[in-house]
Length: 272
Image (cartoon, rainbow, N blue to C red; front, side, top):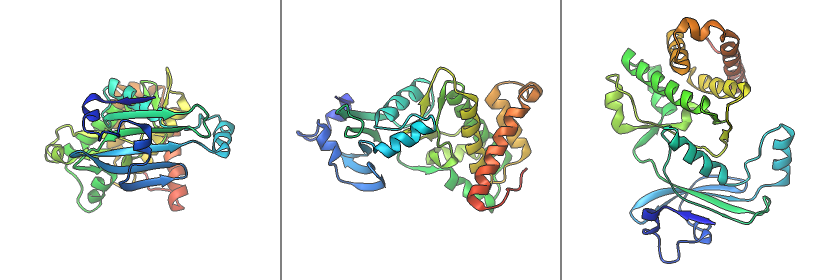
């Protein structure tokens, strides 16, 4: 099957409305891992990201099943996640095509095409400047609030990212000036190919995603006050109630972040 956005379909060449066309599309290869490839390509007057999957290896499937994880076999996971995120009000990429050919997970070919988010910067790169030039209080507060709001919609809405790091958020450059005055920024969450969706996110996946996010901000001058504000915004409750019965949970989040930091840098982080 092949689904195409109506407007996008009109920009394709005459032979472009096929899975084979997208699987063979040339462009700038931005990621190539085993049987998965992401290409930035120009189609018509715009740029798009074309993510293709060429089946999965038996070893990869068995490894994931051994750890009680659903393996990422094709593009369907990202296709489903993008739709769910956008329906939930979580800002992410715009999908313009999805296709799959074959039912055997070892040989299936599948793809998802998204419109490029132009004039953006990854949040981890943006926050690098904070090491030398700390942000104004209102700027950091606005960013903490936005990250907490996105985390709340996703995790309390039955979704978990599995690669929930600051580098997977893109900040629109034209919202930076407003952000520095304390206005809500335009931030997009990307790389949804490993997202899991359930009726309710299990506790261990809440801990993993939130711990990963905490780990990824540890270098940027995050204070205890910032962390507490995040918790209040994430839970939607006053601090006393947010921490009341959930101290063990937030302690586990911190332990997860510390473990990731130790694994990356070989020593414990300096906690706020």
